[in-house]
Image (cartoon, rainbow, N blue to C red; front, side, top):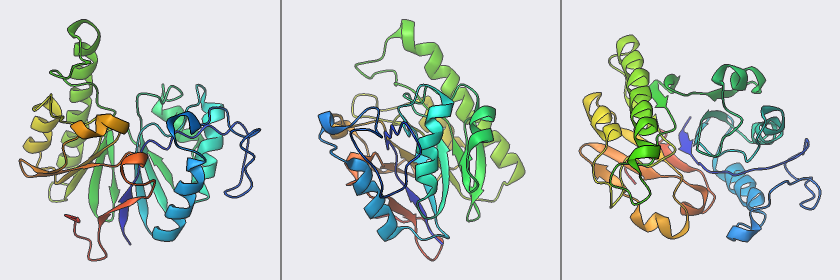
Length: 251
């Protein structure tokens, strides 16, 4: 049993589809071809089927579906559900359907979880998650528009880790964020400080695409392993976080 991660699936099915019976002209609301992601769902499907087993878990930190409404996002959830393994998902900045985690959870197929400012247990490890936000120091950050949202998201991560640490003080901790906790232009953040405080071992994140990935910080920083797991950054293939010995991978 292993833990994998893959974010930013950016699916947009507009009706129920199977893994292999997809008509791109009729079944997809927002094709990703304009970004060079031609039929990217096929690449996700084929890689996922190759590396993920039924007993494994895949973490999906945000931007799962382009849907504006939950009843439409369900088509994307149902497609993902046909892939092997359990799935743990958390919101991204394009998850407009996710105004209520209670409502999202109510429509998820069995074997899929949604976490947001809380946590779950996967293979004996804590997996805590929240969306994150643009960081102070980033060129896109503005005090007027972003400060309150950023601080609220930092607080939501603290809530998740406080609860997890109280109930499972000895367990290893993984954090799912959609936004990165650091970039080359934002070299510190409240997210990093809280993760250091609670002894988080690994943080997976997405959101960064194309040239923006040049600003991604990955590897071990202050004792925390940072991994960018956006689809296009890792070849649309889930990356293994935990090996068969149940230890976090440092690859």
